Image 1 (cartoon, rainbow, N blue to C red):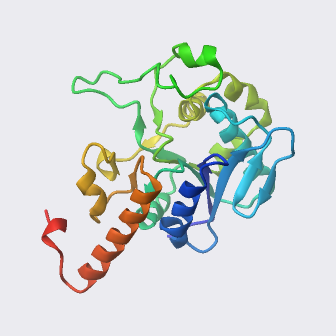
Image 2: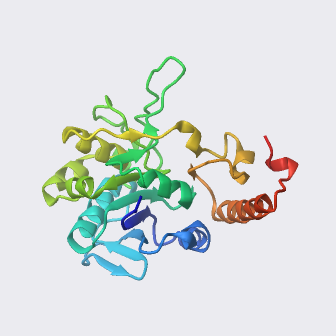
Length: 260
């Protein structure tokens, strides 16, 4: 199935150059022809502008402004780019591009890892203090999230995909107020799309990994779509080990470290 143009929008900040370089030099180097990766950086008081692979957005850089950053990213793409879908992720994620292509090839409207996750009894693990220690505004930084948390959405850290119709909804200037009021960008996107009758296509949990849980799995080519969060050094290490594993596998040999 033909896959149309996809634009990856990656949350980052000006000082996180090492993360951007690690991404550009590893898995992002294998983006399919026609795909693009834009690093999203706030630059208040100046017009939105694409410079190389950096998309500067007219906004203050702050954790509490991440919903607005995603809104402005999608608004820019809708107004200026030809695309079929957008993928949002963070700058400390490792993505398997081939698996990503297979997911997008199914033509989902909105897809990703279910969030919030649940415990063994099916109870939501939503954390209203997730932003503590991250916000610029001291009041927001110490105040638990006050909004409703009664629905599921796609996790923003590992990345979620939206088709053009969803991007048009998120990037609609009429919806700017929604994103200015919200605190968690992935939840803001999911809540808005749900209001428009768009239900998320949640992907299997086995496609994702958190290194702190099982770090050794990071270095295996075992069907992981995304690993998050990672340092720039870990991203490069994962890249080298994954490529070495792939080359040996093509020769019909696998190290015991990479076996079940």
